[in-house]
Amino acid sequence: MESDPSKEGSYRPVKEEEIGSHAPVHSQGRDRREESSRVEKLRKYKAIDFMGKKEENPSAAEHWLEWTERVLKQLHCTPEHQLECTLSLLQEEAYQWWDTISRVVQPMELTWDFFLTEFKKKYISHIYLEARRREFLTLRQRQLMVFEYEREFLRLGRYAWEVMPTEVERCRRFKDGLNDNIRIIVMAHEYTNFSRLVAASLNVERVRNEEQSRRGRQ
Image 1 (cartoon, one colour):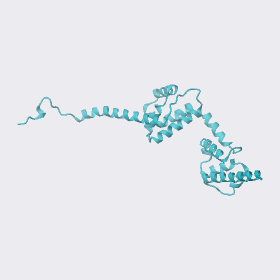
Image 2 (cartoon, one colour; image 1 turned 30 degrees about the vertical axis):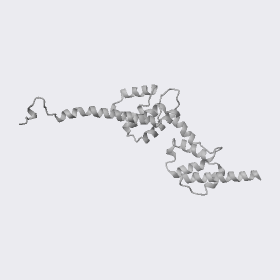
Image 3 (cartoon, one colour; image 1 turned 135 degrees about the vertical axis):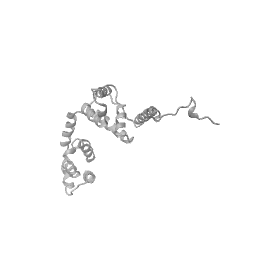
Image 4 (cartoon, helix red, strand yellow; image 1 turned 180 degrees about the horizontal axis):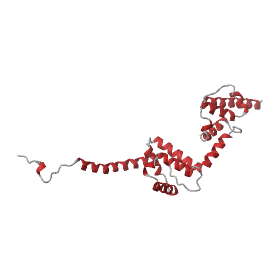
């Protein structure tokens, strides 16, 4: 006759709450491995450290943030993981800055959006942003080739999106900044598509350059 294992001293049923009490240990280990894997991938995609040194100008901080966000997008990170990965890139003064903030802010408030806001306030000043905005508002083609003018228009335009909320307004501003010999021709058409406007401007510039080249050979 087989003995009842429940009556033997070596046997004790395991309660559900005891199983649950061990689950977080495995979960924490898995979370650490996943975080480590994300950081490794971050480095693989050539994310770089940010030191936060005083001599670093706002444009360097802005470039670092943009590049980091680009890498995080490639990794399809959630906002929570975006914060974890980005914090792993903070070194020296930048790490000390965030460490100080994290000690005085409630943990629930330490989100990705909060980090972006605080980082920009600390390293990308309002004065810098306003200077770029004014630079855009006074941008003209002048000695630039059309493709160079377009590049500057797009680079600086992101600091002043409020003045051109629609594509039609963006086209108008781009045309206004073109040199007269190009603007007069493209204004004969009502371009409402920015890419087509740029293509037309490039074409006018090419034709005029070819005409000047022919005259020079005559």
